[in-house]
Image 1 (cartoon, one colour):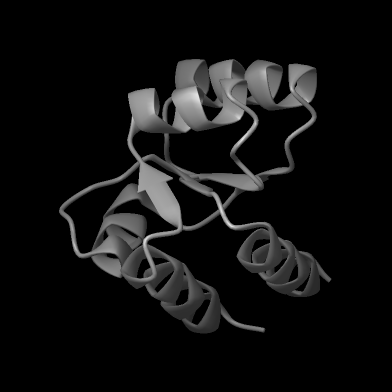
Image 2 (tube, one colour):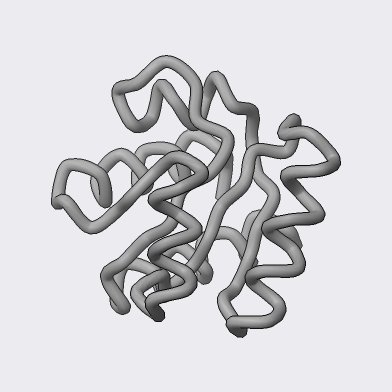
Length: 104
């Protein structure tokens, strides 16, 4: 599974309206129990990575560090995005599966 397929799937989630992006929206989704999975850009700041790691660990939300801020932004039709959360349970499971396959 290559990065392109994962980024395309993230774009599909966005078009379906089942995804939020940006620090505040992602944090709200995680804390309200809506987030099924969180994706943070691999080139995000160490501070951001630590913040998301702590938050996702506490709320038991799967977290992946993937791609770049620029590529995540392009997949969402925006400029740059350091973080996003998939809200739909089934789409989140599919994305987790794709991410785990890519890590193998």
